Image (cartoon, rainbow, N blue to C red; front, side, top):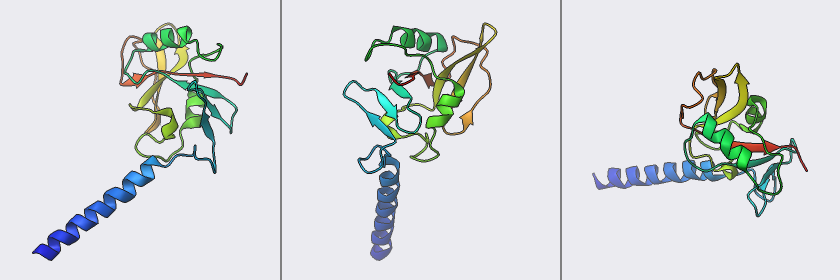
Length: 153
């Protein structure tokens, strides 16, 4: 009975070690840096040239996200809410359940897009599964947060 318990503990420990190690790997290592964060928190994507800034790690409505992006004053200006195409471009398909490089510090599944349709329909990007449908209410939170993006300076 004790051998079985020891084997079980070792197996579970190895499994957790391997899975946690995989989730914490980042392309932002010095060897192959697609995303690099500077001292002000601006993340540069070497593949597209776009610069990103992760919003507060809290759930917010689309209106709150837009207000945060509009008030952002980090490393000059020209920040905007990202499009669905821009958000899809940073979804890597690896790095754990959110499938985005850990450098973005995404603490929830979704990020608001700046794309609108008419006056009250907005997009939200769901990182584990990709784009979702239009959201009817810009005041709903939908477990989403804000990112800001801009073209290179």
